Image (tube, rainbow, N blue to C red; front, side, top):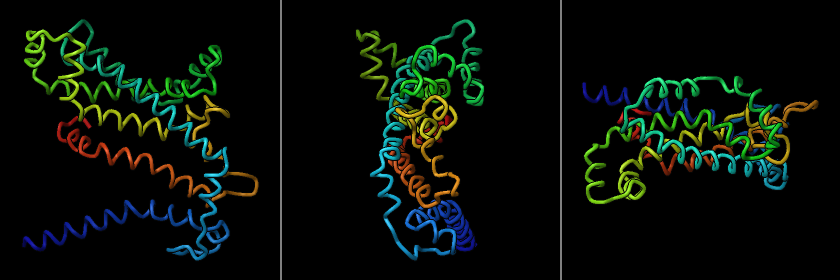
Length: 270
């Protein structure tokens, strides 16, 4: 009986892995083909293997600059989000004040709101301030969604730290900045990793705000990928290569925070 259950679980796990990996494999497979081969035949492996699609991305400034632009505003968003969310989450976890529950809920409602709702206000504001087509514009726009999520995640981790640690540090003569940076922050490094991961993932794949608030100088890769559609048809091969490369940064981030994400699931905050 035990062996039968083991075999069933193994079969289910293998089937799930195949189902999850198949789209990624197929995109990588297409990235090494030509458009003619993609449209002409169905094959599990490239019949005319080529690096031309990747060469086009790494040699064409309009392509590789999209990755650079995305990484720049995503990094800005992550840093600003953590700087703002850490003290906010600490306040929610340690203090009770008038309207604290309502304010916390209001933060989460911003995360639930579709980006299209904020599109016109941001467009008019940034046009007036001269911030259109800048990395800062996209990074600041994404704060509306990343800060509430980071506060919610970090508040859960901070609430799990006993208050006695704060009180003991103050009795020992620690100032708040010294206590927060040297004692408290290392205790919630898992929460910081989880919050940074989710902020990265949202900002990296978000299209509507990033495409509307940029045009040339700060155009992200998600917007650049729409250039593959033309009057002559879809450039499937280049799009597949670009899509494959967009997975790489996310995979690297997941590798570094994989243990923190597991801990976040265990604490019920992810």
